[in-house]
Image 1 (cartoon, rainbow, N blue to C red):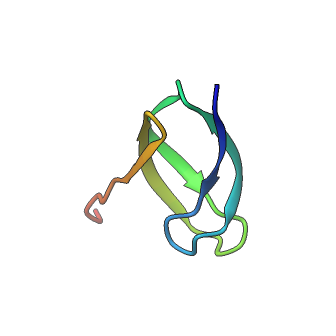
Image 2 (cartoon, helix red, strand yellow):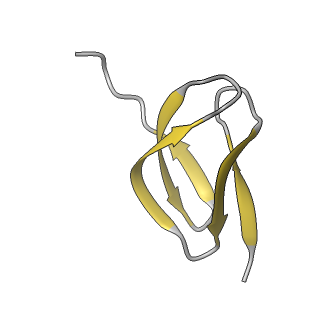
Length: 56
């Protein structure tokens, strides 16, 4: 079993979350304590994709 840190897609620093190779996340609000931004992401098989939603 492989465990990895989640990295911020904006600044590239470590966040406070870890994921395993069997983790599946959909529309997860990832918060970065360094750049103080929140990003919606999907994770499947340790692959992270960013969700770009239009502003309301």
